Structures are given as C-alpha cells and as structure tokens.
Image (cartoon, helix red, strand yellow):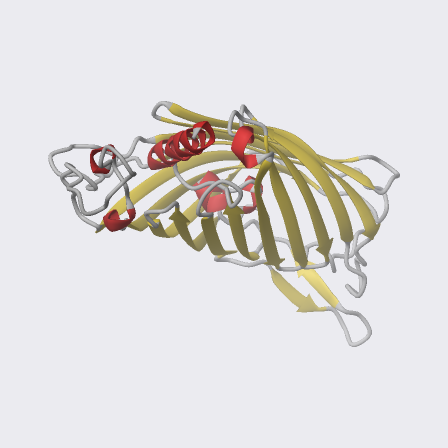
Length: 356
C-alpha cells in the first residue's frame, strides 16, 4: 500500500510540474526554436532536424514528445564555376536575414494532456567584428492544448471501502477540453565563429551566448472554469563553445542552459568531446568532415544525461538517455528515458573556397 501511495504521489508531482513547465529535450542545442529565436539560421545556410523523446515509461504512462524544424538563410552565399578544370569557388557574403518553421507535439500522462505547437521564427544579423555577429530573433506561434478529463481520478471518487469509482461525481468544474492560443517570443544572441586556417590544424573556435523570453503575451489557460490562470513567461539564458585542440583530432564542446518559468527552473550543464575522423577537402568536397562525440550533462536535481553523436558530412544522428537522480528514483529505478535526433544541414560554405 505504501508503494502504491508513493507511486501516485510521484506521478502527481510530475504532472504538477509539467502543468507549469514547457516541453523540453535533453539535446537542447538541437532545438533552436525552443531555446532562442535568435539562433535561427545561425549555424548553416540550411538546417533540418527531427527529434523524439520518451520518458517516465518506468513510472507511468510514458510522456512522448516529438519535434521537427527547418531553417534557412534567405540570402545564401553564391557559388561560381572557376574553369573547366576546377570545381566551384565560394563568393563570401554576409547573410543578414534567416527564417525557420518548427512543429512540436507532446502527450503527457494518463489524461493524454496534449500540446501541439507551430512556430515561425525570424532572425536578423549585425556584424560586430571580423568573426562575430549579434542577432535579434522574433517568433510567433500557434499552440493547441487538449486533455481527456474522463481518464482522471480524483479524491472525491473514493467510495470509502474498496477503491475509486469513476461513476461518483468528481466535484471539479472542467473548462475546455481543447483550446488554441497565439504565443510570442524574442531573443538576442552573440555569435563568434573562427574556422581553422588549414586542413588538420584544428584550431577553430566557435561560441554562442544568448538570452530569450518566451510567452511574452502570457496566454490564458482554460482547463478549469472560474480560474484566470495564465502561462508564466519563460526566461532562457544559454551558452556553448566549440574549441579545437590544435594539431589533434579532438574538439571540446561545453554547453550550459538555464530556463526560469514562474516557480520552476531547469539548469543543465555539461560537455561533449568530439573526435574527428576525417577532414573536409577544400577543393573537391569529396571528403567530408566526420566526427563521433561522447557527452555527459547534469540537469540540476533531476538527472544525468549520457549522450552520443555521430556526424558524417551533412548528416548527424544523436542519442541520449536520462538517468534519473531525483527523489523519483524510488519508483523509476534511475530510468528516465531515451531521446533520438536526426539532422541534415547544408555543406560547409567554406568547403570549396581556395585560400590565397
């Protein structure tokens, strides 16, 4: 009986937190529109990805989250044919505007509490140095939320002897089972990108540091009648680095992510170590840079995240697993949940650029 009470209490605690928090992924760097609209188009001329997360299967009905995103720079740098005996040459230009479209879907718990979200993001870039830029991002979204009240069980439905009877009135005043609202966000980002000067030198340095605000309009939530509950605005601070160890095949990629939303907070920090298997060919493009990365992150008071990523040319696949370390371990036995990501991006724009 004590175990049953503990499980019910733990599940209720999870549900309470998720009611007030947005959906999230462990591979947070792979979901720019959920982290900062100013990240739109910052890394590649074109980028597309899909991601799926399954969590708490060891405790209750699993929470399933799916996401897909596409982003691109509006003025892609151009390529010219040099002559009949050479490949293409890159005409370097600075892209000042980018846009992105993303979709996310989340199903949580016994009541199938669902969130479907479509975001349209734009970012503009301003040069701040030879290798750096500042970007401003804006995002407009449409969110649809739903819940199945018939699958909930409340304390008023305990019959006093044998258990819970769903035929007994709940005493709750339900609101809409499904509703739609607009949602807005904005963010700032400082980006630094210094590529390696020659093949194999591995002295590149890249950095992103940003701040964003989500739910600027604090949309009203209409699950219960007679309440004026609004979605808390969310504030995000994030940063990451990619540091090449000169004259080696190793790169270090530390990252940190912090979001505050009402009484809740999420803080994640850690690092991935990348081992480069091949280098780009600056002239033919036949040899693509490939790498394998191993990483570990800590989500404060919640989980240790183990991650692996394989990048082959323009493609990448990442897998992570949440190892639960919170008080919920009594029922989860450390099992949080897996997450998988697949990404495609355009070729490195400097790949065919001959250096003089």
